[in-house]
View 1 (cartoon, one colour):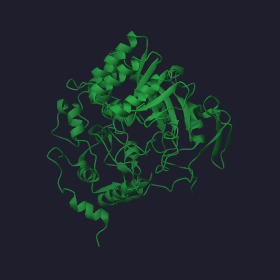
View 2 (cartoon, rainbow, N blue to C red):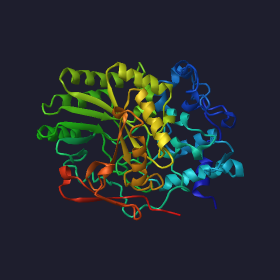
View 3 (tube, rainbow, N blue to C red):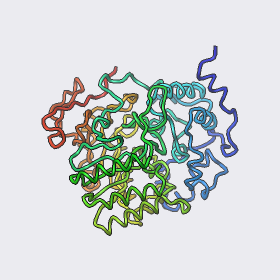
View 4 (cartoon, helix red, strand yellow):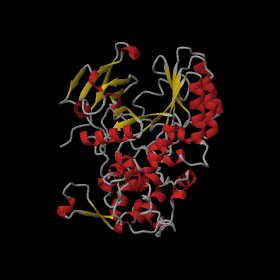
Length: 464
């Protein structure tokens, strides 16, 4: 009897689309690290179509449009399997350091089956933009740090720590009305939508973001005017609130008119002094920032400029986790924002096998700084279900931070923080009350948020 995977595979088109032509087995993967050695990187970067190992017939003018990116986004399991069949070689190295020397290879079909079975267990659905798909090394996908963030592999999924939950930060419990989280005295989180340009495996809002999966039915937050109005009214009625984070989901998926409406409404509230739009868009689909036919960035800049005239700060918070996510298209987008006066800060999540080494984190911080993106936070992974293989210990975070301080200019050094499970908010990782490294349990207090209440963070379970 055919397995569910094999039944699904039969439904997948056996041939690629007309745009996917070149065989990945003959492609030498291009990374920013390799290009940076060029004597003239800016010129060289802009002459290399980094996507054409997948979409050979797509030129720069087309690839750099937001419309083409959204039209070719992979957002369904069958679409993903179809894509993988066109880019993954018939045999790939296993995810073992000595795989090449030992000759340990796995078949493409085994890899696809691993992905298929992983999607069946993952809390997050899959959505990937062409930009992200283009920076993954499909010759060695099991070693790729970008792929690791987005594609669940059943072979890597570990049993959840018993303390993991879908809403580890207690956001729903701290919401006076649906979609508005009020944890800190002077700040609220405005969840405008539950859709993102990509879906990260480790999403802290896996209870709400994205489509339903086999394991999770989402508490969806649609961009509805009535819901937003109730959130605005709450903010207007609470003068202690000065700071708003507009997130979701992702504000990149807000229509430009909606972004303008939210921005103008917040600017019109006298006690609101600052707000920021949270978006991973700059990292996963930077071309929207430079597309002359898309109004999103103009809407953002207009709100930012108006805020500056009023003496209020409007910023963009984005989310890069690895240097390989940065291409010359990213550089163009970041430069556009900088030249147009937009303040951009980055929030990174510390992820095992992605950026949990001192050299890799240092490289990411420096690349972001060069792009005029302020490295703001590095988060210890939230205690959410389905990502035990990506979480790191507090000890790892402490070690990395300790070894970065002094080697990076202070104003470019991000704060390493833990967002406390149960709603304690963000705390510097050095501010724990106790830490039993053997048991992997740390205790914390957050006096300004929760008085004397003690919170616990649990490291991933140690495995032999």
